[in-house]
Image 1 (cartoon, rainbow, N blue to C red):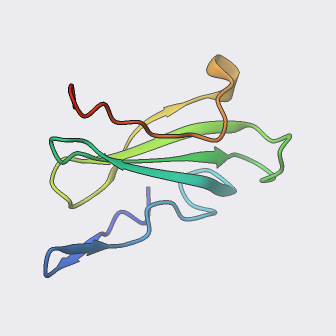
Image 2 (cartoon, rainbow, N blue to C red):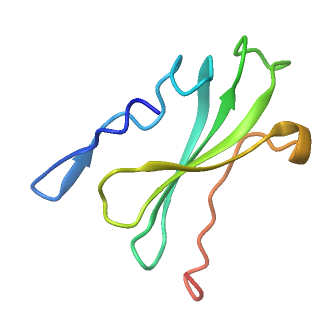
Length: 96
């Protein structure tokens, strides 16, 4: 997937996590971000496959990083299996 270049300077990382038209999806919407107590960064969003409309095939996409560096594609869940929309990230501070 393109857009994997995350630059870090002075402890701050910046880059495009989800770029519309790349990775086989028309548009990415509704991003969510969380950091676990162990420092793992989780970035979620809806990935709309063909038209970007609400009636489109909408998959849930996750990218994660264990090192504040390259947030790589790590998992996606097809809508047909789970029917998920509008992701939200919740971190349990007791169990990470």
